[in-house]
Image (spheres, rainbow, N blue to C red):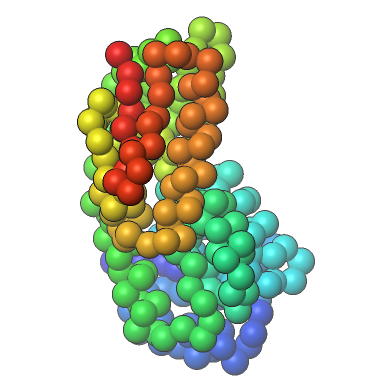
Length: 226
């Protein structure tokens, strides 16, 4: 069965050329503004989303955030003329899987699409088994950390990162291993996104002295916990 892509681009010429190429391999639903695209996303199932950033009515960042509120797993690829490092990092922090700069090649885009589609298909369902870390209970399937009566919801990637740390507790994890396991690539911008997630986990655990995520200079990180 052909995979279904949500493609949002307001440049008619670029949209026609890109969609025409993608339709050789996928079913493509194209929209020229973020608002219409989100309405379609709420009503249909998509296997992957391709978003421009500068869109009318609802920009790509707002659209990605809205998509992530409804679905934390569907892959998102940004295609944008915004080349600032801050824009790429913002897109990745919103939960995007990649951020390609215009002009891009169709071959590269298709390669990225295939990588993320294959990765999402290979992800086996997480067993509904909670585990204890310090004074917290971690539920990886539901992306939840519980301490007493308080429950903290993690993003999918934060949960995957914590699970990787717990599976390698008290051992050094190299940066490249973490990046490859979670993003499929050892990339500078993905690394910056990873650092943001680690910073949030540290804030969550800051009041539990038995848990710490140590920075191992020029190598990686180590979760120290009982």
